[in-house]
Image (cartoon, rainbow, N blue to C red; front, side, top):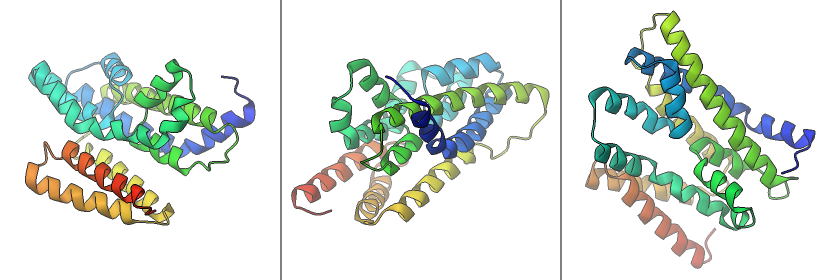
Length: 228
């Protein structure tokens, strides 16, 4: 990938919202890891290998309690199944990429990078390069925040009661931003309705995957029917 200065500047400006959110959320994660008895390099290792904020917060409890590998695996599948569906939006674009780059783009598609990528105009110059740089920069933001949180947690005594709510707050802000920028709200309303129904039927620990499957099926049917 040949990246010029202008493309890098565009990617950085697009990733600024991710920078401010990731930095503080990752710092909160690093602090909680330190409070649980793990060093800053443990936070760095987990952030480098897992890279999904919601699961990383849950992993703190799992690592502290010695949860089984099966429990961790099933939880990861149910919590992060939504990210499997994100790349479907960019299926045609990703198919044009070399395999290593395609795999990286798919596996670094988080809620935040997905939101930024969806906001990029289709005629954006070097669109695919911007998307890759946003993913790379976002990864760096999270890693840096995790390390800073672990170090600050050792130096400054924080009362961390309720700090894990920052991840929920981040998701709410992303949802509001997408709602304001969208011209058609039908998909969001369908997702909300199906998600609520799945929550009532399957419970909070198992609703994500069936909700995504049903929502994706309904949107595919709408697309075939000619709806926007």
